[in-house]
Image (cartoon, rainbow, N blue to C red; front, top):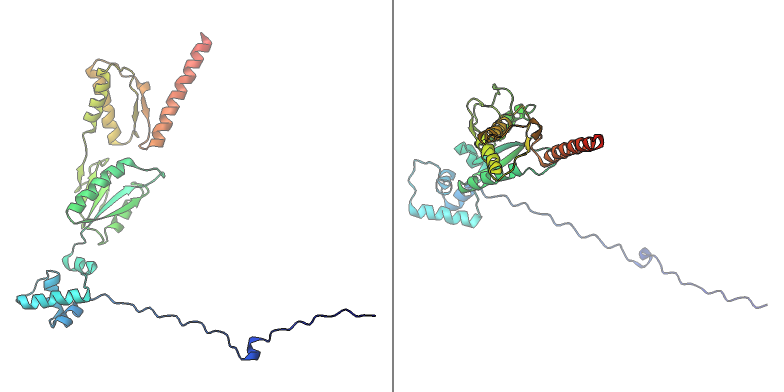
Length: 284
């Protein structure tokens, strides 16, 4: 009987049996943190005090006269060290942050075109005057006025209130911060309010449509408890009266200020009138 040939497999010895050791992991390079140069560093390289360096680089006041040669040494040292002024320290010294705050209600998840238009103008003007701009978001003007105090904690030099809908004339705002409001719902003591002539605008728009021959002009008004919508309604009614057109309350539809609320109000008005027309036809 012939036995099958059994192949013999040669097993490689373990690495430790032939003297190999595991490859060591490369050592991690330590990242050296480079500290930003200070006025003291600049002064030390230039051979002057930090106060003298600050007078040249930051325009700080000093009682000492700085010669042109010393000034050039300070400037050369600043270039050598890549010195950059500390904005926070400068703001504390000057008691100015060069930053304007803008507070607005950001809600409903919809792009607010009114906010973007006004904010674009604020950014443009702030840039012309070398000012920064910070936006503070609110959820509700009537529930969040206390948050305005937290915004005025030294981060900003003044605060713009964009379309605040306060309902009390005794809104308490921080006295140490100047305020400006845009289209405020009520006058706020000590706050300059900037607004457009809403009544005249509604009057001119409505009258133009009437002159063009339109007679049934639907007006989507804002919330009834706000001054702006009330002014626009007065302008709308005054234009109708100026051309002896009767005011139809059915054409005055309450709505909100965003696109979704306006579209919903218009769809509801059309649906109701479609149902009325259907009932009229069925009864005829």
